[in-house]
Length: 128
Image 1 (cartoon, helix red, strand yellow):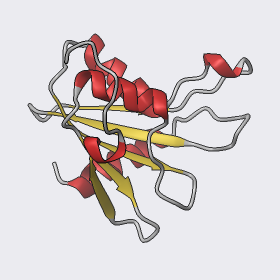
Image 2 (image 1 turned 90 degrees about the vertical axis):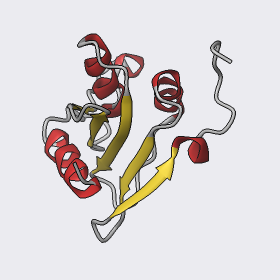
Image 3 (image 1 turned 120 degrees about the horizontal axis):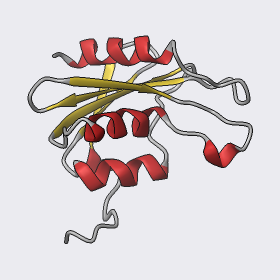
């Protein structure tokens, strides 16, 4: 799957976002090393702490189905700029895939690719 195709899958996932409080919709598409793709969207709650991000939704879906070999994640949002994972999502990504590629959508719609270590150096891990 190409980076552009993964962004398109994230865009489709974003259509299901439930964001009545912030109005900020996010979609994620997670590519496993065997080619399987898991998608997620953000789901807000009136008790803000009970909300969940698109990235974690996708990771938790994959892990709950037995997939932990994660290769790349594409993230899109209703915002105009690239949308990076929040700190909690970065920590979750680091737990399962400290070498994962992060694919974001630029203003022009093209992919922008980062290594996980570029956006979260020295993440906390008990595995070290």
